[in-house]
Image (cartoon, rainbow over all chains, first blue to last red; front, side):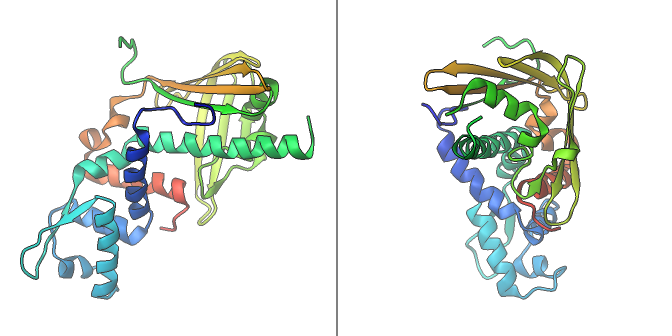
Length: 123
Length: 151
């Protein structure tokens, strides 16, 4: 178990899912899209309206959000309204997940720092 | 599982290939903390770290976003200081208490265990408490902190 983050059993699958959600939310345009969808379902055209972006550019953002599990789209017709997956958003936003990630990264860097300290200048 | 405080107890554990005294110093000295404390996309300059290492002393870190210079402060007060074994601090704003224990293993290696207690319900399901707008604002600042994304 050494060198491992043992904070929770089965954390890997959860981490992978959340990584995709965090990646999706790292972009300000995608956060604005999420904020708009929080007010209700919307089509690609409706979502594109507030932005100075082409439809293909918006579609690209929507695909990233979809991969992150944050939105879903119905299959029907050309409208395909986007729907916010609030549960996933809630999970990605929870302080617990954010904090867990912060400590994991912190430990990674502390590990690097300790190696550098002991390699260069035994102290 | 009987937990006296509200909310779950969160635990983060890691084994480091270093003697316990050194690991403890890394968690308590600004010139070390500056190397690893801030989330990705931020830096935490040593002059922006306060460690008054005694019960009642202040533990404060200012994390600066590398992309837009925005600042995030963690303010805490030490409840217990027992070098090099145990360190407890509480963030008054949230009431969250962080307990760090340092266990010596052969090698020399050190197991660091971080336990967080009194995590408020609002932190567990922000959308249930604060409504979506607030959550999204909070999300945006968390993510900026996480990724250094420009707004």
